[in-house]
Image (cartoon, rainbow, N blue to C red):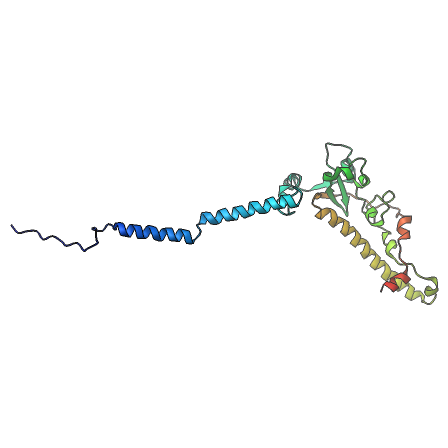
Length: 249
């Protein structure tokens, strides 16, 4: 009976299984890699820590008003979100008048340039007894421009441009022909109307961009009175003199 030849196994080999020496080497290599680099979990921990620290510092620096350094997305403000879901309002002057703060169950609205804004967040100012309560429940664009708060609580801006038209010196006028006077008058009125629109736009942007107020819709059915309103005394006194404008140039 022939003897079976035994296959010689190379020294250091264990028949395909890694030797204890190889296992130890692999573990050391893995350990060194873990020590020398950061795992994904470590990166996540660092990022989360930085975010939490930034939010906490913002909360402290802004006197507990914001954790995002003053930035507050519109969808985090519940009244704004509700209005967005419900859609913009279209209010007639009579309907808008109901939102003047007299009914505590309703928000406080005011309008300028035909746009309605919710100012309920500042009831001390716009609510009953507030300094600017007379602006609420109506479109008082004219008063925003002239500064005549009691007299000009209307949207009618006709004639307001007069307050921006310079007063001429009588002696200088005598040196101009009738045609030159007409051209100057037309130019002054065109520039004055642009000044009125800039003033109205300024106040519209004030409420539109305010962190506490927000737009809710528009006023519909505004009618222009038959009789044009006279410029209030306070606005008349604000008219500049042409001589002073020339000095400024």
